Image 1 (cartoon, one colour):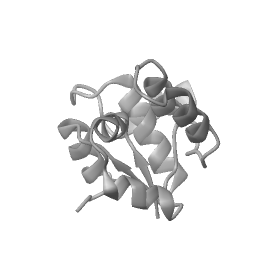
Image 2 (spheres, rainbow, N blue to C red):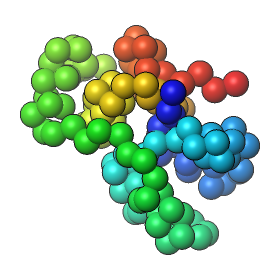
Image 3 (cartoon, one colour):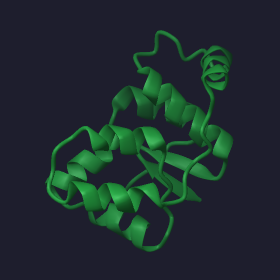
Image 4 (cartoon, rainbow, N blue to C red):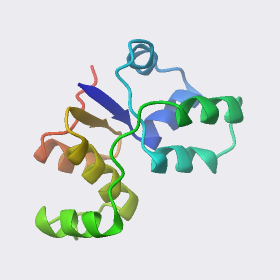
Length: 123
């Protein structure tokens, strides 16, 4: 199983080190998504460039297309659930990639990920 930490997990980690995130990274259980890297790219934090460089070479989830995302939203009835487009893209990518779970602090996104069976249950 691979874990995709959402942007909010990374932001919290940059403020206060998350040891679980470090372990997932150390044992090569982490995957990334270009949208998460993109969201981190527009923030300002220490060691920004080296972190982005490291994240860009990590294993990536499948990148869903615009049409695949629209189909995923419709098929899974994800409209009017309080999530954003980026959330839907990331969810679809996790589901299609397989053997991958999403780690997020966003309540609505987490609930949907749980319903889809792709939520990471951090200890």
